[in-house]
Length: 175
Image (cartoon, rainbow, N blue to C red; front, side, top):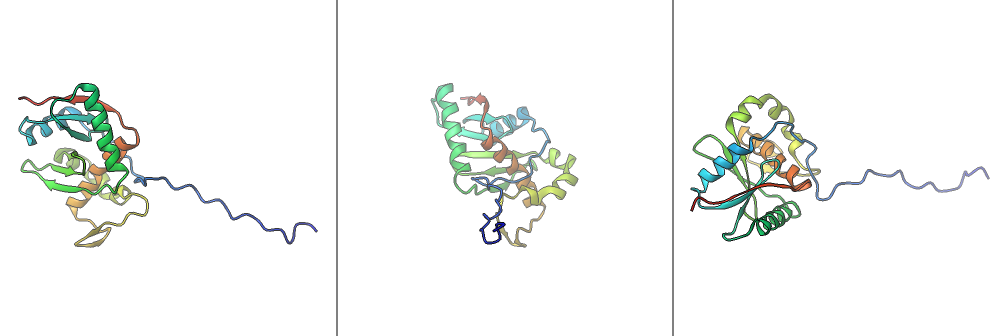
């Protein structure tokens, strides 16, 4: 009678993305030529590496063809994205930050790019956390010093590359 005793289905919840990703997708363009130059410098020119569209880098084993290199880089980035994307942000002597992930995947946070966009980075660094992610720092859960904010900013590009993985170039060692 008039549907008084019928059960209603629960309201639909929005589907959560898996793997979880941060909501912040910086529009700040990464200068790939400078990232290539820094990775070449940090590796003393001894490593082949692949560069993704947003600047994430995958270090490659020696002797791979271009096709093998692309495939290896894609698998390495997939492995980071589909596991917990732990990061190890290391300050470099030049003022940049090298973020290392598993599978020989890395990102470079260029200090001058950070300086030019610091207001945005400070304002949006919490949006660089993936859905439901909690990172424990010496300051407390999800509390970040400037180094941590810069690292979160740089990690956004890895997430962007992982969601749309396209190798833009393969760089060969100088040796």
